Length: 124
View 1 (cartoon, rainbow, N blue to C red):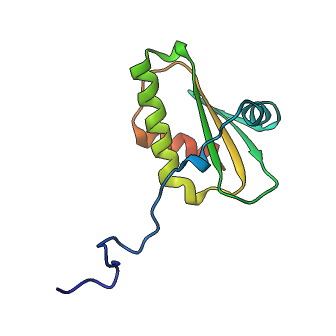
View 2 (cartoon, rainbow, N blue to C red):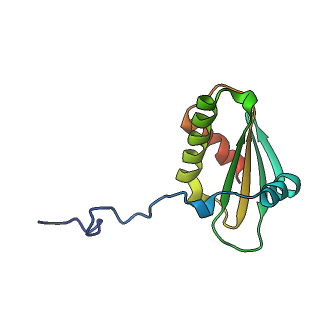
């Protein structure tokens, strides 16, 4: 059996896996409040992003807040999944050691690519 040189023994390519683990989630009331109150704010409707640099240079963390005014639970979870996926695919382009809090205003769910474009302009 002949393996390509770009793949390891499990058949995966040599490119790094883009995951979004628990350590990359913004958790805890203190941390979220700090990002909300002290972080730099940027807006691109329907998203508002608060970014706060941390003293360590660990992986960036993401928090998403979607209020009940956005829609029912199915709609809110769809939006959160698409924003998380958009962030996951572009996380290596972002500066390390930053906490990002994304606030979502009422709107109809957009395509994941649209969320990715909006995040790309907001998370610079």
